[in-house]
Image 1 (cartoon, rainbow, N blue to C red):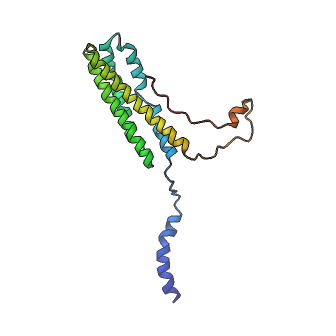
Image 2 (tube, helix red, strand yellow):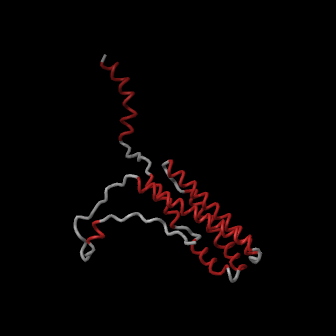
Image 3 (cartoon, one colour):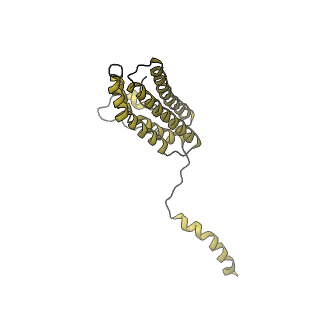
Length: 192
């Protein structure tokens, strides 16, 4: 009789016992981790430097600026779009932020292409030039809006406790900096 009861019970418990040895911890989705991953993509934008260089020459040498857009800025902006689309997020809010960020970068690529066409034409049409600049500015504003939304979401979420050092580091006399935790900083984004 004991055997008859133990066999079905053992069969039910065997999968649980076999799974216990694995050190596979399932971590719950974390919005702060999603925001950190998205901000890392934003901070490491490969288009910033070539875009700044192109902007320095655009007014005086539109054909050179168009070449810089074609050979450096637009490919870098496309890589940034691919990075934004590829970043892994685990929360619904993170997914929404990721989609908004990717849309903003996609709009930026389109605006940069339009701007390149205007510059290749010698920037003769002021209306086309203004439309291209507005589109580029709008895409940059959308990136900043996503960053502001991330800050709002993370600042209202509960934060883990800050581990404070028990001793002052040798030669470090800045007590105030050690006593207060650092606030998270947003990405360094281009100024328009």
